[in-house]
Length: 233
Image (cartoon, rainbow, N blue to C red; front, side, top):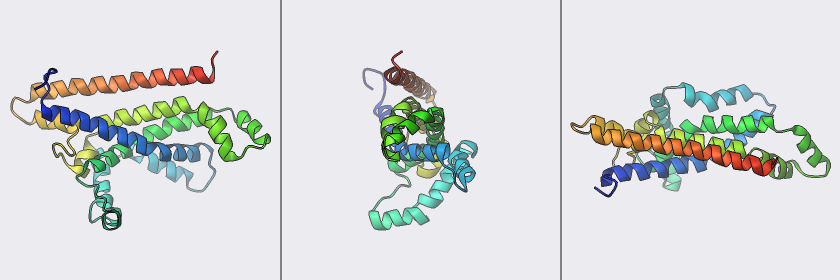
């Protein structure tokens, strides 16, 4: 036990959850912006299908999502076997696999937030920049991107918070290995199954709630600051 009354096992679960959630959030961001841009501005066949696939993890039971990841990214899966053979990357039953599962579950929330921000951008501002000779990429970087920063921040924090609370997909894909894949959620589940573990489970539950609330408050504050920078009035 330390000065906070937490054991090494509890600290390991907390720090691993923060690490996994942060990696899931950062790794999802580039693809999240791209997919949000495609859904907000793109006109192509299959747009509705893409939108459905992106939001599928919100509808499917998390265990089903985890099982699909295990089939695809397990060592014998079509993607997992290639990663293992050619890059030496193994995701199943590793913390990196937990980050993948958490990223997949939080991805729809990130995309939706960014997409709504893109759709709210005044197209006249982009058109004005285009008439001045700016390329589409430059217009996006100098006009669109600064305007959607509040939505990006909100999407990132929502993805992070979702990753912090993920359980079903994670435990199905990477199991519940202490020190490797045991996150806050799976640690809470473990302690509820152990005689006398209710107190530890309650402590971890309160910590999980506190981290999630801090993340949401930080999202509101950062979005507010970004909004003031864009529109000082």
